[in-house]
Length: 548
Image 1 (cartoon, rainbow, N blue to C red):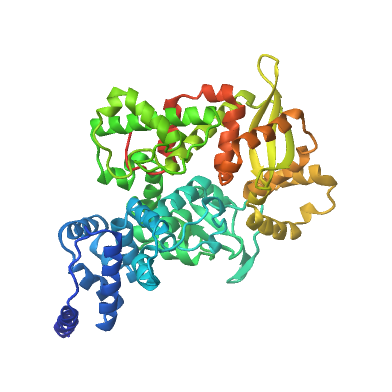
Image 2 (cartoon, helix red, strand yellow):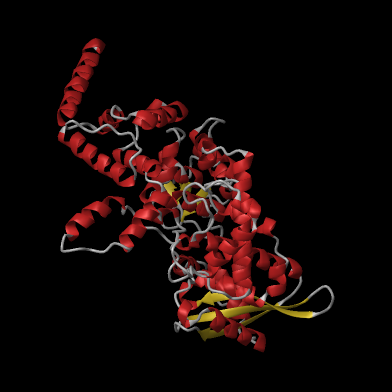
């Protein structure tokens, strides 16, 4: 009987494989760029569907056509993750895996740039659409507005391949969704009514999440790395479906499992995500000391360049930043001057790909690092001492409403100081999803009945620990308590905003505008920030092509 089943499977494999060979699929070497990769996937998808392959056979037959570097990469994945895991992927997961590997970000950016500067000759628009459509993929999302409740999140695979690690890092840094102040509903399990136990948050605090919307618990690290690890310990339940058998707490223990369990593998990946030296790009791209020194010199020159532009409220970009331009904008012109007078920089080998640390995104990352260092120095000076919050509102050149926030305090020498800490754009306060959950939670909580004013409301919010579950709502409440105070210092901030956001710079983004205003006002703190501090913070922000 067993032998006949094996013969049946073998004959089916030969039959389907012969059909696939009949259609003559192209071998895949993975060395011809993003568009070639997507077109091969589209062709292969048509063939396996026409040949009536089962889901598990699609990947087996596709892998047979891998050649050269792609085949070596695929065999490495099989050795590290296991044959069952790799051949157990769905077709969509398989496509996303190839896209993330053979459609690199810098190449996609080049294609997008080419598309934006493309001039249509004649009316052959359909040909242009068919050329660029394959690389469109999922759109990028705002990392500051990711869903908080686990039940509202979509799969990590449904995000753009170039943004997945940033999304994973954002969720892991923000920590699991744990609404500690929520009154969890009871449900009948067997002969008793039971509900979620708050003590589980303390016991499994680094990964356990609770969805108020679904009344289920999830595992954050298994959600982030669902298809990278094996299938054990109820991984699908805790990463996709949700667990709510409150009478079976031992399931939480079995989910964690032993040292080599799927959960612990996912947890290790989450921890490695914040460790640049353990990240996937770094492991595959080991660099010697010469390359690291070159990266450090280029980044250090870029930081000096940004420092000069920020200190003097200069615009970064130019109208024409091409190599043949006679005026490429302040940033690139200053960098050329630094390069001209720095002999060590001139002797460096040519940078690979987009690893030159000159792009607008790098400029904004450096500005963000400077801003964080300046604000940290202010908060460190205040410490645990008392301070007042000065707030006023005005509109900028683009008629966008914004609030300037200034802290007033007495320093260690007894001097009164007023320090600018940022702009808050009225349309950017991203708390609508938290506010809806919070209102629903408070309506059902008798402890919030018969309160006397906002101050009493804030006190009860802390007592019930809802300030931990709903941090944005609590921040808005604190702002409301201190809003009545304002001084001329705040008004001077808006004068600086007018100097930064001019008619020629009216498209400057809110985050970059905020950073530029901080530097223009807090020049003394800005001067104290060292390049080394900026480099350290820059390297921890996200996975980088080059290590320092």
